[in-house]
Length: 188
Image (cartoon, rainbow, N blue to C red):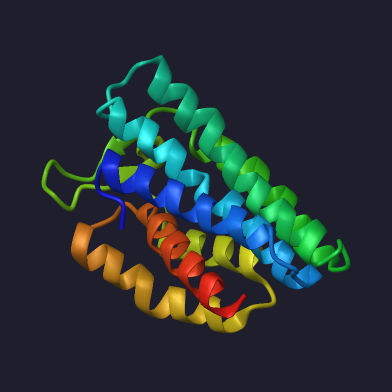
């Protein structure tokens, strides 16, 4: 999980380097889409790194990163899954993707803050923690139809993050970006 500037930027660099390497290989359409999604997904770590670098100060950099960059990255994730990986063929997923895209811009308007000042600190985007159900719906929207990944994330990762850091589900992006990069390097 990403608890510092160094971990966030390291995750971004590792995931992007793995993705760029994988894109030089002969991949199927599904594999290529997965790698491109990993690049989109792990871009969140660049936004988190900016917040850490800024020490979560409530200034314009925090506001624009939280209110524009993070919702944009989250929106691209759901729209990519609905319209690229699923080819826009599920009206319910398309509707959910558009609704979530609007929702994250509204929910995250504001400043990010850290869960706590300890070593397990994690960003709370928009100073408004996502509920378990909001994260679960978002995971469905970005990972459908990959039920195993959604299930493992929902049942293991989310409670683990809450138990360790008492919130800051955004750090989930860090952990999953690293895990996905390693899995794709092994599989592809």
